[in-house]
Amino acid sequence: MACTPMIDSFQAVKADLEVSEKYIQLMQDTLGDDSLYIRSKDTLLRTFKDLQITEKEKAELVLSYVTQFSISLSSAAMQTSLSWAKEERDGTYSLAKVKADTEVSLANFEKTKSEICQVEKQTALTCAQTTAASATSIRENGTVTAYEADGCLVKTLGTNGLKYEQTKQVQGATYQIQADAFRKSGVVQIGIGTDSVVKGLSGDANGYTHQQEINAERLRIAYEDSKLNHAANASASMIASMLTAEIAPAEADVDRWREAIDGLLLKHSTTNQT
Image 1: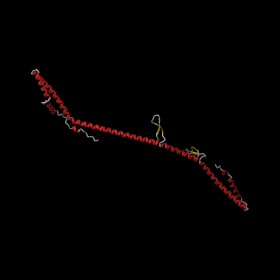
Image 2: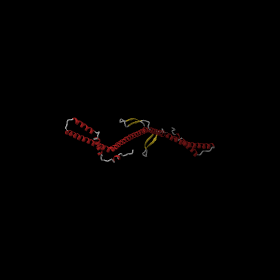
Image 3: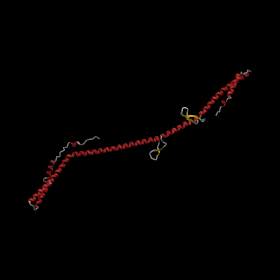
Image 4: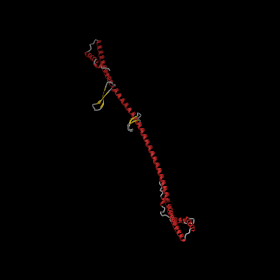
């Protein structure tokens, strides 16, 4: 609200008190025909008629009365004139000051209302921030189920937070990795390799990797046995044909047949099939 000073209206007022005119007017009214002074004087004169006093005593009484009454009336008139003039002079200032004080009071009232409103808004903002922080904490960490003895530090949390679910996901992934490792390699021995790095060094015979190695070995042996079998069959067929034709087989052909048979009889052809 714009501030409008209220002092211009009394700064221009004269500082002199205009007492004389007011004093004369008051004295005229005080000593007029219907004034209290005249009535008192008439009452005094009527009283003198009933008193057995001399003219000298009467004059002394009148003089004393007039002097005291004049001084009293003059003093009262002067005081009244001063007060009257002062009120006329200071009236504008007083009104302006009252108005200014009223405007200050109204401004303070509006200021107090604004401060109360600001406090209420700050309180609402703090409440909203607290609610948001609490909601975020519950969403991330879950609700608090127990506090420490001081009532402030959190002791345990519920299982309805994202971090709890993430922990479960990590644990599930860990279990899956461990299960896959066991399925492939069996129980893996963990140790420090030649490169000084902790790693899986070896597995037992429970994983399918070991079984794949056995199967690969079986295929290799079968392939070798198949070659030897074909060589033995070919040599035997050739020797049989030569004998049928009454042709003596060459010693080298018989040796090749024997080598093939010996190869089939080697230990690798009867490898453990477990």
